[in-house]
Image (cartoon, rainbow, N blue to C red; front, side, top):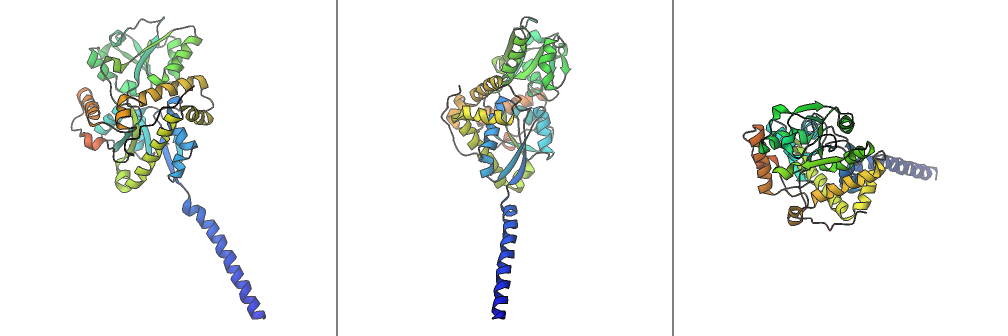
Length: 345
């Protein structure tokens, strides 16, 4: 009897120990993979897509534990992703192509803003600017890696603007509005999605805001998109596919539920003015849901438009030897998702 009791105790002990070991191992075995996702800029309303992916579990369900990192300009984001500082990034596509021409080993795997957002803005009752050529003799505020600054030489050449007559005033991105109001600069580069913030700062100082889009003067290229290091694609294409598809599921959900998507952003970024974030987001959605997007689906990069974007970079940035097939791919996208646009209050 004692022998049988001893065997029973040992069996129970083994079961308990085994259960404890399994309990310890299971979370580790099924833990989501940590991923750094680097933005092009400090978070504001146009980035709501990505906070929806985070807060609504799209990335989690795909097996990723994602940390969203703020950026300091698309050029810096491209360099950081190429260097392996982040597994995925969101950056201006022409800026990424310029980076690739200089050796950045990244590939574009989807577009978010099908229509580019590059803009120039100024205080209309302080300085008189009607179009790009009026920028000659002016001081333009910008951070070093701002996409609109990077693409400015292309705009200048298209419209015949003498770049030697433009003075760049380099500063941090948040300082641009204050610099205009203080008279330290005459104009600033920005993305159209930032217009509500600049307009609000102008009103607060009793000034009137004005701006124009580069696309109004012949520079209509792709805007922001997802970038991935090439070696990551080669090493684990399935990982890239899972992340890209989860992201675009979140983008589609955000288009259909824009109000709820905005609230996910505001939850994680409470310092951003809600009214301004709403207008940032409204503009971002308009630059995503274009005629091309409705024809081809979100994320998809049209061969002709991408070739035009590449040709523009080659022409105005002395970039040679670029092959568009090595710059971008649609292979990781879910084919032709065209979400129904929801209502944003």
